[in-house]
View (cartoon, rainbow, N blue to C red):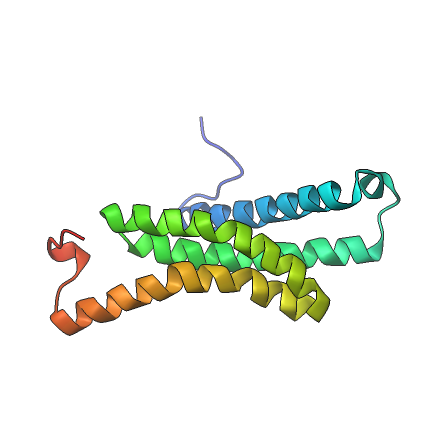
Length: 148
């Protein structure tokens, strides 16, 4: 018995890989809606949908998708304890990312995406880049039996 929604063959791995960033983006939108409901009450959710709400959710989805793709790329290349550390850093960066997306809304669509992705770049990307550069300098990698 196979799942008909997942393509067979070479595209199966690509389909499985793209599920995580899309799920992350959807969760990012849900968190933004929850924050909006806490700030403004639930009345605005029951009102008729407006183009501004749809545009805002599209911006949040784009910010979550970019952040999710970045996290997938970084975490898939990490291994062992380093992956756990980066996952913890990503968890720490998430509230700052949500706050950044809200603050970035003042600057428009680009501000939402940039301010939402910046905490992940700073708290996850910079350490991953520093480790990669350090490993190139000393000539080791995770696959050669490095402990850290």
